[in-house]
Amino acid sequence: MTSDEMRAQIDDIVSSIYLQENSSADGVPAPIPTTNSAFLTERSQSLWTQLCTPPPLQPPNWKLSRIRRLFLVSLGVPVDLDEILPADTKQKKLVLPSSSHTRKSSDTGRGDNDRSNRSSSRRRKEKEAQSKLVDMPSARILCSTSDVRLRAFTTSELEEHVKKLEEVTREASETLTYWLGKRETALGDKEAFERVIENLVEFAKKKR
Image (tube, rainbow, N blue to C red; front, side, top):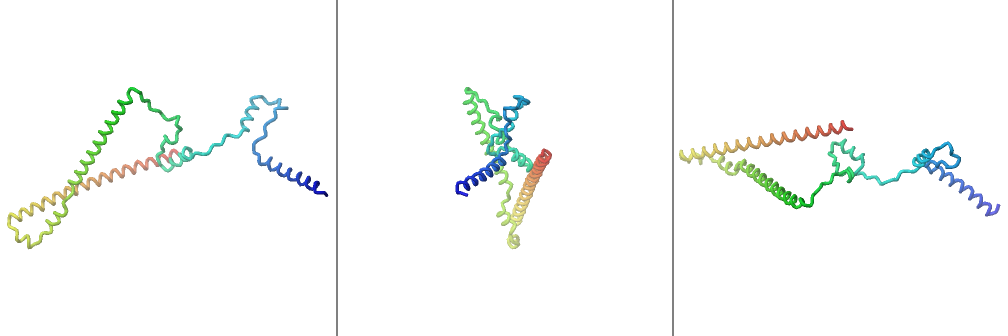
């Protein structure tokens, strides 16, 4: 056997092997030939062609995917629809040219008023909290008066000392009542937020 005959036999074997691999790897159905298809209508031919055509593949977008939205809902996490919905579905605000300047000035004035109101309310709350604090160094000095010093007091000085002690006791009682009320309010807010979160989780579980 010559080298040319051997090369020809090897080429036939290799070409037959690769032809089988290509035919098996191709998963797209073969199109129906237009000839000898008198039993098919033009509509069925078009339908078969559309079914055989592979769909256009796009890279997956995890941020806009339905799986991510369902996953967040199952965890009870609020989903921002503005990030998920396409831009065409968002409502656009209509701003008239004649009223844009007036609206901007009114919005600016409203924003300044809101900021000033928030700052004033914050300062008022800080002053109220500071007024509900007891002067601990003065109270500690007043309560640590020794017996020797008390024996040296006159009657008027003793009465003044007792009056100061009663005043400190009253301030401490008011402060304790104030902060206990604040703690009860905070605990009530905490329970309300926990109930809201539980309701959201239950609602998300029912929606799954």
